[in-house]
Length: 397
Ligand SMILES: [Zn+2]
Image (cartoon, rainbow, N blue to C red; front, side, top):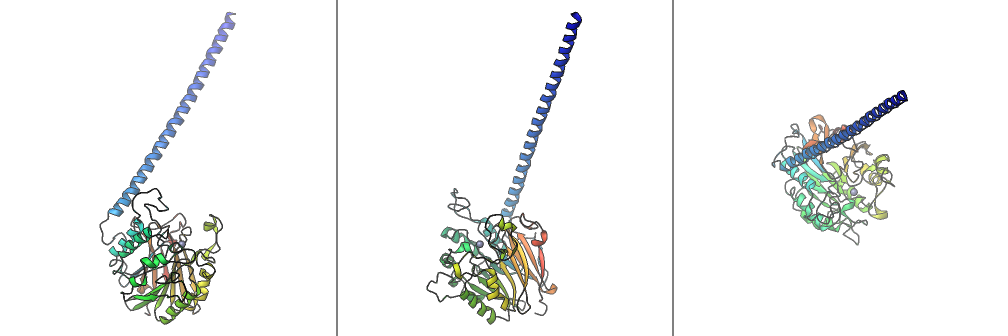
């Protein structure tokens, strides 16, 4: 019995040791896991904090940058000049806006304000000769946003020629752009020699397509003469006929068109993913003007392709495509560079830097908030979709 008892005691002791050891190991493993998880969470939180602090510091430093030329972007070579394209500017925040419905501060748009201030500060350094807005100037077609838009664009007024495109957000579904016309009527521009004029509809409702909703501008630099057309989203036939006349009358000038919808998903997306996944190119669908609205393919066929002087078409509207480029050829064999830039209303401007000596246009996408070149984007990771060069013969004058 004694031997049996001793053996049982030994067995029990061994079992207890084993149990205790297992429990200790288990406890230690749990504790270790807990400590590691806590440490990881803490590290992540710290890293996130640091990122936010860095971002905030960047934004603060961008906002705090003294007005004046931005030396982060190299100046163009001698003889070069720049046309700036402002992508969609729908990022309005403040009281009553869609983005911040709970906000109590007045409506504002820091990105838009920063863009126009940057342009003014860099007119000389970048030799900016013209500014074009691709449309969707506002998010909601309401006075509070239009007032802010006008404040932003007032910075350019009288300092550099500019033109505005009416996007789908800048009018109602039938094409009524009366609020745009209230804030940016033809009278606002008539004093400037570069203002060419606007389409005047012979229709019963002048609030559709009238009073500067479709306009053109004329400017010259170093013996290069330009005509710049701004056509509303899905411009109807009578607008395109007028555009034909403008381009023909000024066939001795290099022509550029900005219109709101040109490149994006070719077919109309049915669901969210389609905006990313559908093949991209000239869009075959419209948003505005009902059955009289022309899609990008129709605008090309009815008007653009016929004009030998046309060299580029700029557009916006498609933030989920963000940036897209297509080279087209007009009926006369002229190369037409088509460029979409819609960076979701945040950050970058497009600069078209004409370099006559190199017979090229350098397309530069530049973030005026962070003051850096835009090299990538979640929808367009490749650098060459943001920074690229186009061949354009200029030496012959
Ligand atoms: Zn749009």
